[in-house]
Image 1 (cartoon, rainbow, N blue to C red):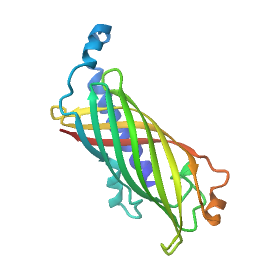
Image 2: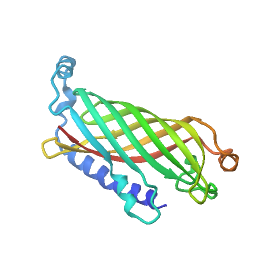
Image 3: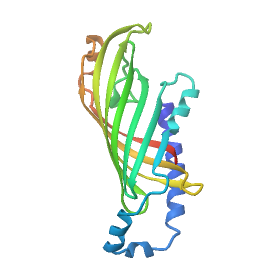
Image 4: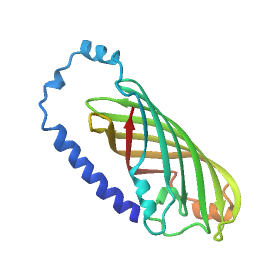
Length: 214
């Protein structure tokens, strides 16, 4: 519940900032020709590298945290194309398809360690979409924190959002919404699988990443 409230408040704040900033500009950019766009594709990118994370890591300071940590590296090889490599870890104790609203919890928790690769495409202005695939090694633990067994999860994301650039484009913030789907989720202990049966293997959530370009 605490993550849902934080997600709603922060996403609403940055969405308001985005549209108040951009829609005060003129609509002249809508008349860009195809030849100009082709030329833009070939331009060199200033500060093509980036390191970032998620602002939701701040929730680790709240009681009963999910121990969510994320570190991302990006390489923007054209003004519209960006490759992302991401490492993250977190802990959850309920089915992901009902994350934040589940009525029944696991008899323990799951500690996940993941490495992901994504492709980000910028469209009009700084609107973007991202496709990302993450492989997770999952440790199933009992209520005492002792490991029961390991499992594997393939976690896919389709993300749509907007990049807000600050301080001469050195800093950026990306409010977005993500469709998340995990078609592979293996080796659940039977006590965990009993809770998981019949639950969705997808969810739509807000995200709020930030980064520094160099």
